[in-house]
Image 1 (cartoon, rainbow, N blue to C red):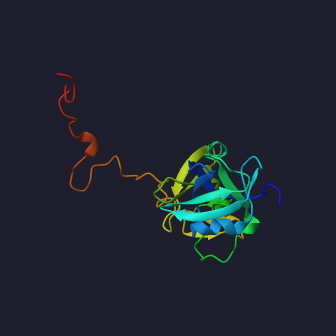
Image 2: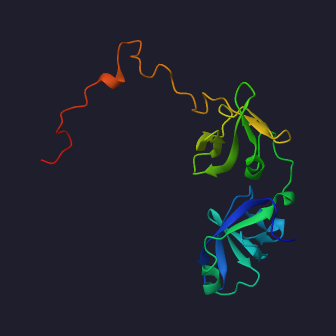
Image 3: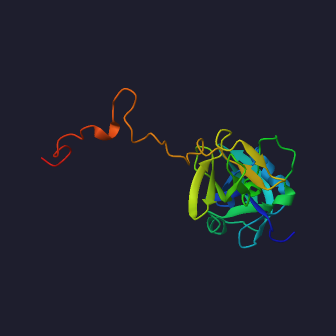
Length: 199
């Protein structure tokens, strides 16, 4: 197989492990050891990596790749992202499970069914998946990929539907008005002018 046409990231290579060319690898597979089941893995530039040996090590796996036999060669690979083609992945997941690659490119519809944008990327900074969406002229709009914010996803029909309020796209119209208890958060004093200054 050649370089993936529809790449899905499976892992990222970390630091060298020992002096014989082994590497610490962070996987994005349900079972970290399953990384070896997908055949060759590919870097963005098309280089292929064949796993010769893999074993668990805390929250990563230690991998030996074919042709990488010393620490210097291993260190040169640190940070390399590894991919397979989408066609290599099974389609038998749960109904509400999606590959990031399947979400990118989907049309974004609002609660009326109107197309309002497009998914350009999916990120995860540790707190769950976040959709990076272009809405009209607005780029880089981030929407949490939760059931409340994104109640419907149809990969086959090429769209997902968002709830603008749950997605954080609608400003509270009454945010400038005092609350029902008469408290106006914008009207409260900010403290003395020299608060927090040098003494």
